[in-house]
Amino acid sequence: MKKRLIIRILCLTLCMALLVTGCGSKQEDNQKNETTATEVPITKAPITEEAGGRDENSEPVKDTPEPSVTEPEKTSYFESVAENVERMVKEALEQYNSGDYTPLSEPVKYNVLWLGYTHVTYGELDFQMTDFDREYLQAVTINYEKSLEIITNHNLDITVDLHFIDAATPLTKSDNSDWLFLAQETVQPAIDNFSATGEYDTVLTTVQTAGEENQARNEGKEGYGINYVILGIMTAGMNSSMGYSTFDLQKPLEGTYPLADPEVPSLYATSVAVHEWMHQLEPMGNLLNIEYPDTHAYFGPESFQGYQKYINGENDYDYFEFYKLVLQGKLPYNDGGTVKYVGMYPKMWPLIKRNVFQLGKFVIKNAEGNGYLSGREDEPRLFISEDKCIWNIKYLSDGRFMFSPEKMADKLIDLGNAWDLENNTISLWIYTGYLDAQSWRVKDNGDGSYSLQTPYESGRLLTIIDSQGAFLCSAGASGVQNWNIEPVE
Image 1: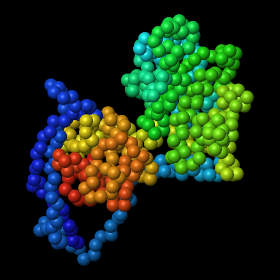
Image 2 (image 1 turned 90 degrees about the vertical axis):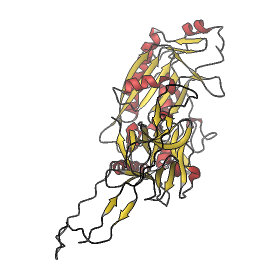
Image 3 (image 1 turned 120 degrees about the vertical axis):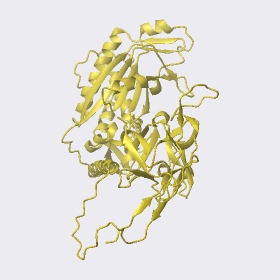
Image 4 (image 1 turned 180 degrees about the horizontal axis):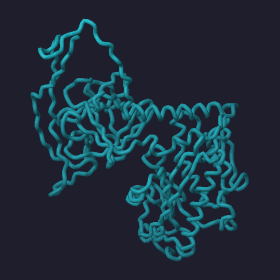
């Protein structure tokens, strides 16, 4: 039986050390004693082949070969992720298309981190919660949790962890408007702190600007009456590593508090929280390629063709009839005379968990030597560094994944101009909407390593070539194409 021997010979070492800043940190000109990441020189060995035959020490070829047992191919981690998500997507689509409302055999456990910021500022403006506000917010979180579980027919099992943050925290002014809001970037340290001891699927944050005390505190100050805290704003949903919404608490409507029944959505702030959270679910339409209602579709056909108008206070408390129908998958949508009931069907709920599409944090290590795939903020080039760069990996669809440096969450590994050409440049770039150019198949090489493969027809691979950067090259091209993708503990 003939054997083919592949012998790797280390024959050439190209050494070039370049001091660069660590992955995701900005380079400061003339800054002394800064911590830097050093690019690692790439050692690439040519591949040689020895002609057929056997070496002198090999066993003689038997006349009758022994029967071989073919082991089943093992499914790689990334293949398993893709298969699991595609299965869930298929099942959700089948329910939607058949109008099937069969509940889940077990509810989806959905964890909410709720942060009540008791003291927020903007310039001279100073807003604080009273003891009553804290008590009211506690009731709101209970009302949110219990009423949503009832509305979703217990397909969701919600746990809310409420924490109050008393340190003065600055608000952010919205671009091109006078609205203020609590930016996710501002509260991220608190999110990270609480997430270290618990797994959360979304974060809700609440401030309080209403009330006589806040009015007296801010009357006559610059910006008061002009810069208002926005009622609610959604800044992240299913497309992000963790959902995030923030809104103003305001005061309870007369006769709605104390709660008569925590399972009935009877508080104004509950309706605002549910509304902002529902925005996070809207990417479901793109994910399944189905009609999915905008959270503002209660405005009716003038703004949203195919939807009927819902009137605040007449149909139900604060549009809650509309919210219920969306969350039960029973909102009527008229598509040219054919009525389809749209919204969240039971098998869509498992898809909203943060760890379904977000695989977590990884390092991408050169499988052929030392160093890690890295990038930096002051230039888009990818390179191999001595220092670990942490990557967030997200599953997209159709066996494709997106890669983003943790410290540059707005950047993705991107194929230049979406051109499937040999030696085309690959770099870090902001989201463009050209998903084929910003998503990659994770090709299992069978030896514990992976290659990042374009989903385009050529199947070319991300290749680091010396200190020049990353390029799209055919398999076997000179450069680093094999990577060990390891989770960060």
